[in-house]
Length: 145
Image (cartoon, rainbow, N blue to C red):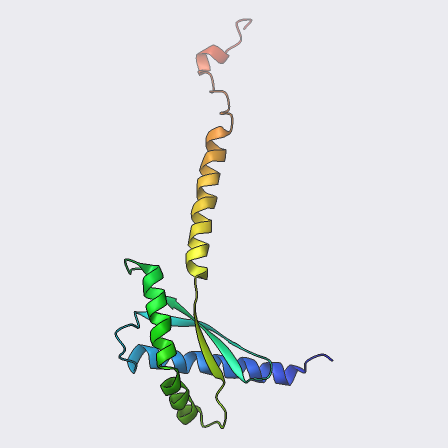
């Protein structure tokens, strides 16, 4: 049975509101030292609305980004109860979905793909045969004239 447009629209609005509210909480109210500078990129709400995956991107200026992602996700998982409570109070809803936090690596992957594509373009350009050099105007004159 196809999903109704109204239900899908409602889920999209709830996911967007969750993204904004969780982003505000991360930026200003959570003081866990494990949580690095990060932002919420997406909230994927399950069709039933009982759970949601929250994708968080860590600032790439950090030295060891893999460790920073791991620590940030651990800090957010530890603060999950507080986040759910605050969202419930702010949104005024009965049920807040169960949250699971995941590191969003899509930006890094996209940057790496762009880098590889640029390398390939440079190689292709270097391998292309160069067009013959244009001869000087004196050499182009016809000797029969």
